[in-house]
Length: 164
Ligand SMILES: Cc1cc2nc3c(=O)[nH]c(=O)nc-3n(C[C@H](O)[C@H](O)[C@H](O)COP(=O)(O)O)c2cc1C
Image (cartoon, rainbow, N blue to C red; front, top):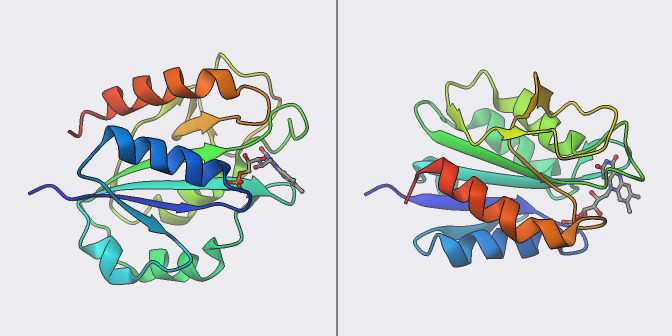
């Protein structure tokens, strides 16, 4: 069976809120806050949905501090990976969702199959390390300024993943 896990880090609850929403839609998915997640959790999961917010002008959320090493050491070959990131495009237009960009850079050469890139044209920002061409490397969400768009973006994105 294709196991699905949602791994996330969240400081004030926005990424957790989104992770739980994804879990409501993909009923078979297990939720893993990265502060407690183990390498085995990653390696036992076929489709990894991985979410971080951005803090301190472009960093991943704090709970990734230890999890970064776990991600680097884990065997992710052949796994599907879908990234999502939360940020604030108006206050931080030069580092919008850079946390997701950093996450992508960290694991992009680990042999996983990235799914769920997302068009960037409906956002208003100047720079992001999460951009490749006209697409974000995963779903970008802005709960600070556009919470009303989250549901629609999320359902479209999950449909595009084609994993359940
Ligand atoms: C001090 C601070 C720094 C932030 N830095 C960035 C940033 O560089 N880029 C960005 O897109 N968002 C930035 N944000 C916005 C957060 O990523 C956003 O509020 C997010 O929804 C928080 O999610 P969380 O509660 O899951 O951690 C920052 C917010 C704060 C308070």
